Picture: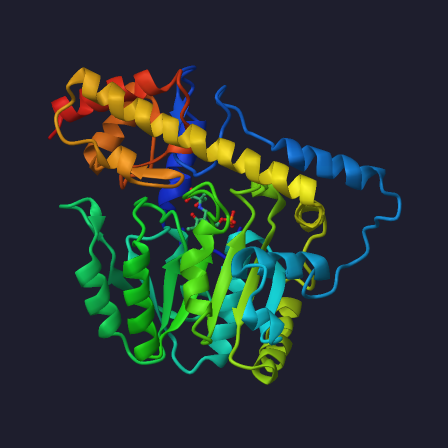
Length: 405
Ligand code: PLA
């Protein structure tokens, strides 16, 4: 039978999802999935925060709670609290009513709505993303009709920031271009600029009239502290100029599948903010009408209640501390095995991931012979490790590094 859709070509493989599926289909009982950046418990199980369970109980017992449509921009309290989380308690921009926030579908949905708005209303269609960056960034921005370019970010030689290259590339970007900046805990490299470097980045961004679009997917996951991890963004907002911020509660509240996040747009004046808001609402209405209610209700319950907020920050710090000890254990295990090479980057890098430096051949061998899965660029999710699995990972890294240079 003839298909009218027969001319559709298969999509290229997604670099993160394809290894994720390969791991899922591996029948080995000892397989280890370090592909996607999700935090697992020490037992290797998906982890739901205690405070999230409590918030859900509270919501279930509250009979005044209903399932009506939310407004186009989502839960009003959620938006206020989300703006406060990233901009701080006494943000001048908020006081001056020049900030608009929209509850969106997690980090991805917030980036997508922001991109769609920019593609329609920003005069400059070029968007710069770091090299390397989260693999979905180019998809999100291309699909919205923006044209994606890269700026230098990571230097494989030093396993650190290519700060000179970064400044050169942003300095050469066309005026008005959009620049994606990962707010903290850079994915996939685990390398962030220092605050002095952020200040220099801010200066060049402002002097070239570039428009910063922060991807804030890991607030709290770099330092364990919500406010410290917001410093870079707050530095930009403090200068009174404009920016967009996509915030995700996927990782810091472990609400991955609830798809809850926000898009905040900081404008120069209240008048601009009103116009921007009206256009973003049009984008939202055409894309999904209104955002989902449950995840936003959980987040709002936690952020609103000072005891729950405190308990959340303690649990968040607990996750970050466990990740730090996994880094230390892995580093020490490789040292103990005398694995060739310098592995100190494992303890220097921050956030959910380590960019191990393993090449694609070594990564493939890790999967084939050791049933350990990571992305082909050598990225492992440290949040997926436990004291039980570190020795196996270290044995496998030692074996592949010794076999293939
Ligand atoms: N931004 C960055 C930098 C990310 O790493 C991710 C998720 C997101 C945004 C979007 O997350 P959200 O929509 O769930 O809020 N990156 C994951 C997931 C964790 C994935 O790509 O499949 C990763 O493994 O890189």
